[in-house]
Structure formats: structure tokens, C-alpha cells
Image (cartoon, rainbow, N blue to C red):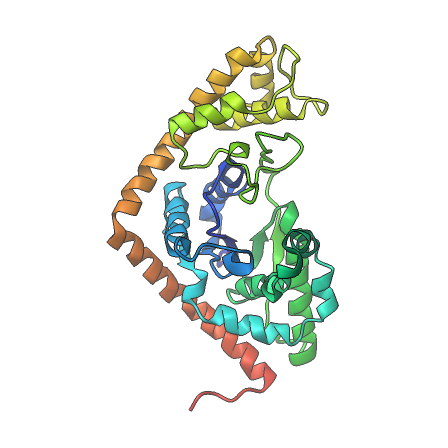
Length: 335
């Protein structure tokens, strides 16, 4: 029986941080042998907000190298760059023409980001979910790992696929596979170091809010030393202590201990004792990833080969799905 196919992607905007790793990538790595995985660096999405053209290509390579450094295994997974496959843009346009505008206007992320950008908000930001739908549907994905902030986008993908099939396909032979969410055991929800009520995010303007996977030991120590805490002695997991709960959760995840074990270990500690312990643990946990990343990024030919072979493999599926869509819409084949 063929394995189910999983599709997921990360934008090359900013460095990956502990929230990305502990909340998503580490879960992918642990379960990757169970699926046929397609991991994409979604660089077309990166320009829906202001970006630096001088660093986009390098940032894209960094994300691809970090996938590998974190443990993505090419025996089970395909890694490729979104913009290297033109079918993403072409299918997004075709899907635009069957997607009602009001479906996009109600998307929560668009509303939130549009407020920040004001009059400079782009059509691309509004259309972001249709491109995401194209990313998923091009690979006949059975499952898509989603966090809280992407659930609405996946629902839109499902709605677009169902609408297309209803309008342009026979019920017995759908053109587009309708994907299901991949809900694994509850992943880590890593919160900001400066506000324990907000999720750790690449878009946060403060570097002090997150620990990046490639941060130096000195940077990690500085961020943990200055992170927000509370004045209560004795550390505990508690809804009333968001910063304390977040830091204890980080320690548990990075040291591979249960929350019960960490609660018992840290219940009589003060911050002056705990912060150095967390710092040491974080540095040790990230060291193997950073060493592997350094090896990969310095072997440019190796990384380019992986991305080229990934593109060639991904293009087979992408072009097949795009061909099915164009045929259903009535387009002629190129002469």
C-alpha cells in the first residue's frame, strides 16, 4: 500500500527559530518514515510583504540547508524551491478564476497584515491563500500539517478543490485531490521570550523575542538572560504564569524530559539558578544542528544537487496536476 503524501513549506523570511523547530520540524522528522514527504521552501510567498531582494536567494538556501540539518531524510522526503517550478504560479492564476473574492477577504491573516501595511497592502497578500492552495494541490497531497494560524488556509484549499471538482469534473473522477489536515499529537507551542502570551514568531520585530536555530552561544545566553519572567520564587507550570510556563516548556523539550520531571526538578529554583540551566541546555541541543548546517552550506555543490533533483522529482507531479486542470478547463495542448 502506497504511503500517504504530505506537503509542507516554510517561507525564507528570517531565520528558523525554536518555535518552528519544536512546533513543526522536529515532528516532521520523527514521523517522516511513515509518509511520502514533499518539503518546499515557499519563496514566492516571501514577497507578499516587504523583503530584501539582496538576501532572498541566500535565505532560501539557508532554509533548505536547515531542513537537512534538522534531520529531514532524503530517503523519505523531497526538498525543493517553490519558484523553481513555474506550475505554482500558473495553477494559482487558474484557481484565482474559480475562487470567489469574498472567500479571500474574510481570511483572518489578510485582515491582520493589511492593517499593518495600510495603503501599501498588495494584491499578493490578499491572494496568498490561493497560491498556498496551488502549492498543496499540485502534489496530490493527502495530508497537510497545520498549526492554528494555517487552519483557515487549509479549509480554503479544500473549498477551492471541491468547487473546482464540482464545476469542471465528473463526481467519479475528480481532477483535484481534497487534502486532509494532519493532526499529530499536540506539538509544542513555543511562546515569545518577551511576552509569554504570544507565539514565538519570525515576524516579531524584536530579535530578543526568539532563539534562532543558528544563534551563537553568546546570543542565546543574552536572550535568555534578558527574557521576561515573573517575581515569584519556585517555578511551576501555571496558566497564571505564562512566561514561567513557556521557559519550563522549552527546558522540557530541549532536555527531552516530561513536564512532570521538569516540574519536580525546578519547583524550588529561582530564576538565577534556572536561566543558566536553560541556556546550557539550549546551546547543547542546537549544537548538532548548527554543525550539520555548517557542513551543508559549505558544500554548495551538494546543496545545489539536492535542490535540482528535488525540483526534477516535484515537477513530475506538478506538471501532471497542472495538465489535468488545464484539460478540465478546456485548454488546448501546446503545439
